[in-house]
Amino acid sequence: MTFLYTFIIMLAFWILLSGKFDIFHLTLGVISCLLVAHFSRDLIFTDKTKKGRLPEAFRFIAYIPWLLWQIVLSNLSVAYYALHPRMMREIDPQIYWFKTYLKKDIALVTLGNSITLTPGTITVRIVDDEFYVHTLHPKFTSLIKDKMEGKIARIFGEAEK
Image (cartoon, rainbow, N blue to C red; front, side, top):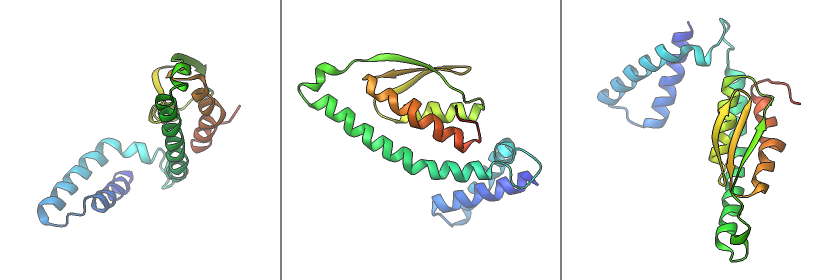
C-alpha cells in the first residue's frame, strides 16, 4: 500500500511540475514515478500507518519560507561585506565547529543543507553529531545555533536543548 501512495504522490507532483500532457511525456512520467516509488517508498511512509512522514513534510514545507527569507538576508549581508570598502577588511573566514543535539539522519542532512544554502556558510563535514562549517564572518554562525537548529528539531520531532 505504501508503494501505491508513494506512486500517486510522485505522479501528482510530476504532472504539476511538468505541464506536459501528451502520451509520450505521461508515459515517461509514469515509468519514472514507478521506479522512484519502488526505491523510495519507505522514505515517505516509515510505518504501516497512512500517516508516516506526512506531518514532518507539512512542517518542512512551512520551514521553507523562513529559510528562503534567511537566504535573502544572508545574501544582502554577504554583498555588503564584499562591496563595502571598509567591511572587506573585516571578512574573517574560519571553520566553526559545534555539536548538535539532532539525532535523526534526515534532520542532520536538513541542517547541513540549510547551512550550505545560506550564503556566507558552507557545511564542510558532518561526523555523528559534530558539524564543521566554513563561515566568512563569525556573525554568520549565530543563525545556525540560535534559530536554524531549533526549527529543524521541531520539524522532525526532536527535543530541543
